[in-house]
Image (cartoon, rainbow, N blue to C red):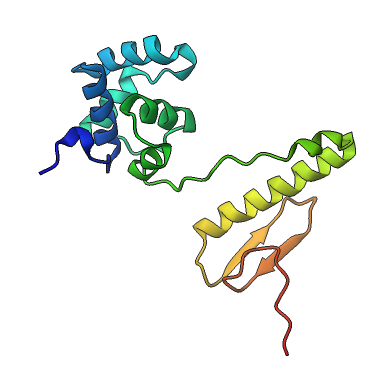
Length: 159
């Protein structure tokens, strides 16, 4: 059997335990202190959260900074931390450097498009895959999609 230290964490509890093993500590409070020393106060994970995770009663969605800190502490890939939390991992998205040349209104338009797409994706993830409705705020148009195709894509042309 593989030593637990070298296994991928399958749960948040295993992720915290791997971090505790690395820092050679035996409590959530001691790990909290070790994380502050190692990564600074801006990446702190409170001992209360750590103890709830260790007790198995943590049912919230962890913040990205919490997952990054625990992944770094346990020396596992960030993708593994997201998997342990039961969340999909997505690479951070960055605009190309040439986007700096956009003017104010153009930047606002790009940000608006990104927000609309993210909103549509979030709604699609929580809706039934074969029939979902995307409704924008009252000021915006309402769009309904009744196919499993991602929102915003044109219908394929018929031959």
